[in-house]
Length: 398
Image 1 (spheres, rainbow, N blue to C red):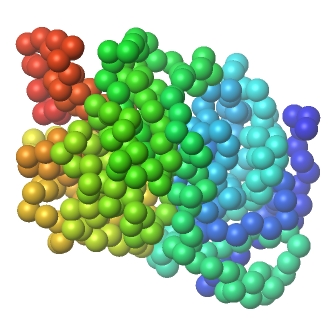
Image 2 (tube, rainbow, N blue to C red; image 1 turned 135 degrees about the horizontal axis):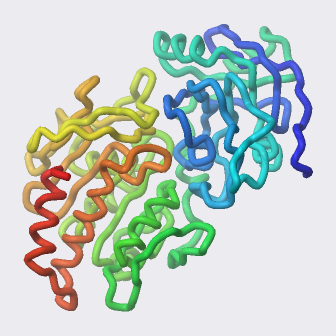
């Protein structure tokens, strides 16, 4: 397809409560249905669209102008767009960036993603904040009444196991390419070996691990504890991903069986799965945490981090084992943002420490994991300077 606009057509975003927003269709297709969510990030539309955690959802950008720097060859967080649809106030047809290879409209059209432009996204966001997230549809060929009727027959977002859609299909070694990696890490046979349980991993997690010299083996979400143990990991990472953690009972059992065998880090959905392995329940949030400006406080050090977040479920700490300590909470609603085991090397983060898009304040978690792995490897020497540096990082002091 040539790098030209696909033509504008009248279209609507229709919500399951009957509210609708009119605009012009861009991208490709005539209908798409999903849970309508919003993110407050001012930049990073390419990273957001290709984030597997948006599977099953129609993504709304609250910042009014999108597509202004085009699409590059290196900002994808996976191999394709995972958001089902895209809603914006204005989508520019004239991007300006030296590395742009196509317009955002072409990027969407090439992957058969339907977008809606010309929408008052701030009004839409206010509605979702009041009502809670809703199922919705972008439609070109229906009346509003027809779309509402169809929506009410569609399954709700929480019924779908989207991890099955986005997980790896086989066990494989992560091998960075020039297109995907900016890392400077040196990986060898003696490097710490991370087994990454793929619930919907983003490329930047693997970039950051590789930059710290880690070897990475990616495994599908349904790999059992024995299969992971056979790979002899020095550390295990549970990735972010989409959907309801209550549907991942098998993954929860796998984590429970692996505690004590190697250090474990859980991020976002991985954090929720680890929490469930230690007795917690999870709940669906009203309008979710999505954006690059969420304040989180470390309850141990008092350090405040500005974090990138993308999740619609949260951990209820009431049922947590006494072995688990909640170490960070969200300053806006006190939801659980980080946990650590009191005696085992198990720790988790609800937010996206890999960002992309967003601030890199919390990349320290990868340094912490790297330090723990290095201490566990007889072949790797850890100097007093390394230990001092880690203590500074872990305390949140820059």
